[in-house]
Amino acid sequence: MDQLPDFWRTEVYHPLSVHFPIGLLITGFFFKIISLKYSREVWTMGSFILLFIGTVSLWIAVYSGEMADGIVSRKLCDPTVLKDHQNMAYTCAWIFSSASTLESLAQFNFLNSRVKSIILNWLSTVVISCGVLILGYVGHLGATLVYQQGAGTYQPSSDCSEFIE
Image 1 (cartoon, helix red, strand yellow):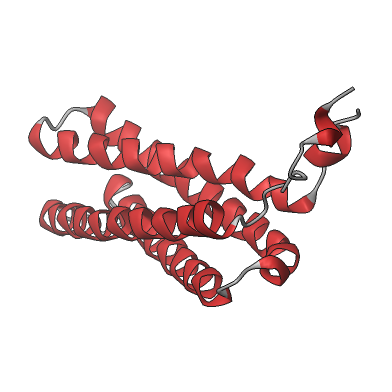
Image 2 (cartoon, helix red, strand yellow):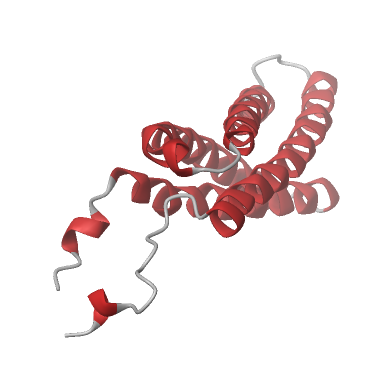
């Protein structure tokens, strides 16, 4: 039995791409919190890099989710969960994009004022915190799609004869 075609199914790209931004953004959030307490360059720059790469990879995950939409939505019992998942994913991506912009302004001191940088730093922390909460909800909706509705999963026959050689 040849498994290669299963890997190249379009709906498989989304679960392959979605876990990377989750890990990066949550780790970046923790780096951000640590950088507020211990204002060392390693925590600040680490948070900025993780947030930026996580945001880019989040948009890739959103794109791969759009690619899977047409295939997955036809097999769902309740497609409203998929629509909520998509809408919240876009909201999450825009929130983290905003946070990345705020972090860039603060990191590179575009405003030429220490007070403005501190305000941007705390504002970006609040935005990142909101983003992490929404990211958790998006993940919950995604898990609901997969584990309750079987979105994008292969359903074997009742006797699993396709796995017997």
